[in-house]
Image 1 (cartoon, rainbow, N blue to C red):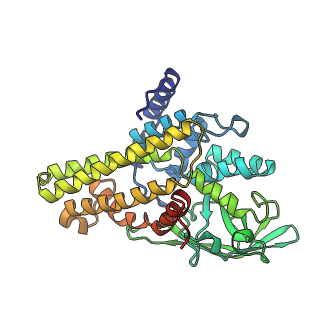
Image 2: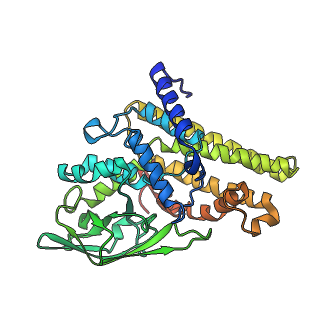
Image 3: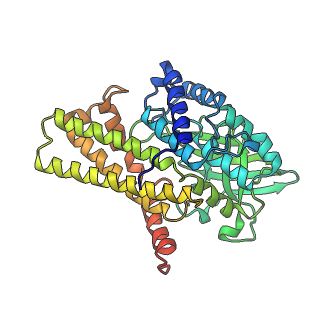
Length: 389
């Protein structure tokens, strides 16, 4: 379905649009829309988060008792759309505001909520996610990192990998084994661990695009207090699945808008190169456009469910599987259109540079946030009801 804003949403949308027009300027505008983040621009991204916090745009849908604005799903969607249309920069505080915050509101203790939610809303404290391990990526039930209670302190040992923004974060939420006499899901707990301590080592990993977005995190006797378990001992799987559920939501509609703007640049490059009528290029552009529309209508269907009070379910795996392959194919088309220019690093901030980054970084799309193989298993077992094989 198509959505027509009611007067209150139109007013809210205008408020967002006006604020972004006045504030998304200067050094914030220079950040662009690229997903590339590094030490050179991290301080600017933090300042932008703090601007958003002061204006009340962080924790938009959080309940008012936790410092949020208790915005509706329609308002959340309007904000996400306007932010994308204004070419707002990638958010530095996603893991705190989008993942840990809602998890603490749902599963956390009052003490945890009072300690951690306000700094997230101010843009003062940053988080990363410690789920995947070298031997347990999409199969989170197989994590081997342990936390052993020693008096009033948990001692954490193990290794996490593909930990985005760990080099900038102050805290990490870690899925680890605390119930060592149990197996698989029943052994897991969700533990909050400070990063700035002798028992934690963060090693950035250079990816294909030349960025160190991902990191390895090593725990060697790292400590955190006994009250830093979210959701109770042995309930880590349930808490972690809640966190992953919050990763979906209406944010996909903003992503789809960014994809649409990227596709428009691809089509324009084909026109500029004079190849838009080439049979193969036309076919690839037509497929990309058709699949972009499929994503848009599927996203609207999900939003309809949210507006009716529904929650993200396993059907979200269909979208993840679809957009990850779509963006990889679009990156391949971008590289082909660039031709020999794709082989030479282009100036940062240029469309050619962004296309190069898409081509290289999109290789990770079918691995992170649950590999394509895992997404197919979820679709088969939890959506279609097929037997486990």
